[in-house]
Image (cartoon, rainbow, N blue to C red; front, side):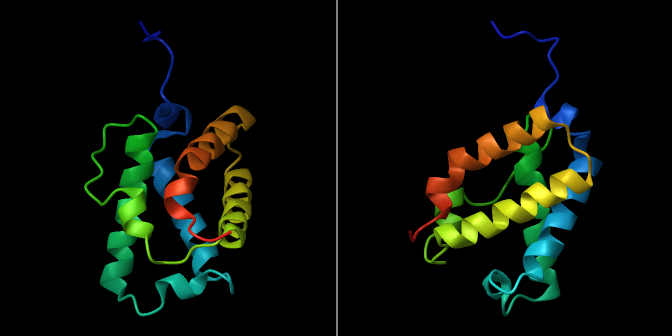
Amino acid sequence: MPNTSEKSLYERLGGYDAIAAVCDDLLERLLNDSQLKGYWRGHSQNSMRRERQRLVDYICEAAGGPVYYLGLDMKTSHTGLGISESDWEVMAGHLAATLEKFNVPEQEQQAVFAFGASIKGDIVEQA
């Protein structure tokens, strides 16, 4: 039986508002990166707001928060985008910088990156 006194990653990251702030910072970095910004080319403001909300909901739910993610699974939503290993590494660098900016403790950073590693195979299509 799991130890119920241990806080979820969602709680350790600071809850919804903190996760949303991290997602906002990360998205800003990705949208301004010369290698990655093309993935959002042609998206309307409404589409971008929806993508942002889906990201926040996905991370909150995956971290054990009281949020329901209603979007597609990662494989379905990324198939056909041609995301490369290089793209993944650039994103990971931006994520690391964002986590540092928000002073996320090392243990929580490791948990975030471990989660990322667990879904990488559903996102990256090209070596």
